[in-house]
Length: 138
Image 1: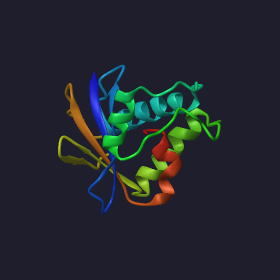
Image 2 (image 1 turned 30 degrees about the vertical axis):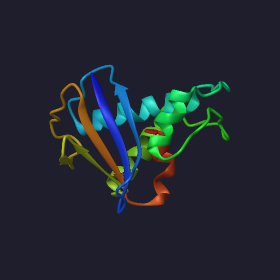
Image 3 (image 1 turned 90 degrees about the vertical axis):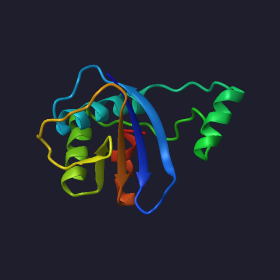
């Protein structure tokens, strides 16, 4: 199942990033969705990056987002999946971010989730202290 994930800061119109993500299975609850996204983000954060030159199309696409990034990792991520999942759960419980799916806010951790192919998820971060949790998604 393919979804689009958009990250935003509260009080700002500009997106922090937009990313297409392929989910291995169809999540039935918000908990399953957030856990799968967290594990995908953790795997990406721990993947070894190589220094490859950016193509002009890469530069143009990233410039449209407002920033051009390189494949350099300045810090290694040594988190375990359990630690990352616990951090994500605590950030959700504490209200550090909100999740919207196709314009509807998802507030219930274990309520049934109605996602479809090409659903659009918006994550709104309410505080800058969610940086570690946020990197799991972007």
